[in-house]
Length: 164
Image (cartoon, rainbow, N blue to C red; front, side, top):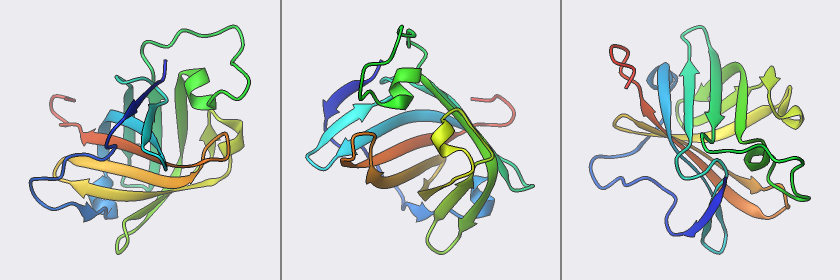
């Protein structure tokens, strides 16, 4: 169930400095905090609801895997015409090799597997910003309706001992 709100879509960076992500900084497991899509007029949508769950893993071998789910999603008989494909499915999963430009923080996911057929064998480019134990991956471009939006996925590093 997606929801629309108004307001900021970026994490609070009032303490410390946010830096471009480097490859070594990404390695490990991350838990999804939020997934937002912001319009140019300030509307913020939550394609996987306001309490999405997910895991993102970056391996030292150069592979990544992401699974994002709306835990409250109820499958519809058929998605509404023009519906956001991620919100309609209630989930998104993809994996493949990844590369990072350590100077700019741009992260590229080279997808070999995807729950979205239109993403299969594509390169998904993200801007990576690391702030303490939080990673924000964002990108700007047209959404499923052709409107320019900024999508942001906020992740928190998982502690390998507690997985929290």
